[in-house]
Every structure is written in C-alpha cells, then in structure tokens.
Amino acid sequence: MAQAGGLPQASTTSGQPYVSKLVLLGSSSVGKTSLVLRYIKQDFNSVLPTVGCAFFTKVLDVGSSSLKLEIWDTAGQEKYHSVCHLYFRGANAALLVYDITRKEGKEFAESKSLLFMETSVKQNYQVSEVFDTIAQELLKRAGDRGSSSPQDGEAVVLNQGPAARQRQCCA
Image: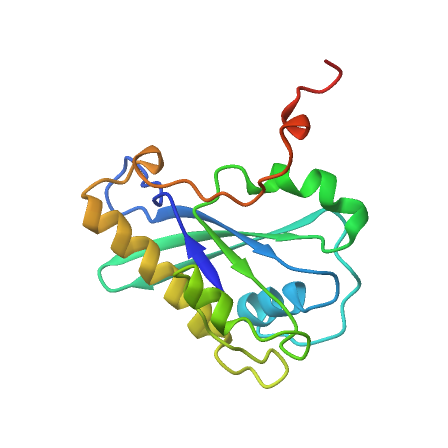
C-alpha cells in the first residue's frame, strides 16, 4: 500500500531529476529491507534487522521526466518507534509493507483510497512495478498541480500520536 502526498522537489537546473522522499513502513521482519534491496540491487539474501533507518537512492526515467527516489527503510522493531517518526518528515510517499499471511490489506487500502499492490520479493514479482507506480503517481501529481514545490501538496500524516508526544525535547 502506498500513499503519495506532497510533490516531488525539482532541481532549479533544467534536465535534473525531480527528488522525492519515500519511506518504507511496517512491522519487524515483514521484508522492507528485502524489498528495497531486491529493487535497488536485484539481490535477495537474508538480511539482519534494520537498526534505526537505512537509506537508498535510485533515479527512474518516467516518460520524459526523471525522478530520484530517496528511499528511507525504517526499523520495524518497537524499540525504534519513538525515533522513526523523525525519518517521516518531508516524505512525499509512504509504502506500507506487511506480511499478507497475517491480515489482507486490500480492503484497508480501498477504504483509505490508497494504491495497493501485492509483491513477492522472493519470486521478484511486481517489485519494480510497485516503485515505478509510486514514481508515476508522484510525477503525475506534480504535473497536475503545475508546480514542483513540495509545500503546494498535501501532507502525509504518518503519526497521529497523542498531543503529549508533540512536546519539544527537554521542555
């Protein structure tokens, strides 16, 4: 499932790719890192759990435009939940990765008007397609609004915790 919000940020130099931040979200051991490694490096191996956040980039050519995806792979372990929201700031899209054997997400995605695709990292099924679809949607939204400024788009609300969590540190 993916929600695209905000707009990709374009470089001021003509011919440079749009830059867009994509965060991967999901519980521990659902395959977030495996998904991005399969996409970026065409590699499928066992990986250790992510500590904090891992960062990847890839430039995609979509029609006559280019998009540089900055992919933030967040840790799924609960002990990192308190810091993961820091990685969400400024995200243009989020990809929710989950284990389909636990609960089917299609109904949830449809109820929230989210993009939905099932993938298999092991079989390399629709891995590239999921990232390509997000890139196309981000560029489409940038074109529809006739602007490349991320401030013109809708924000992606990823964490709606209690108001007490919004306090400044040490205040």
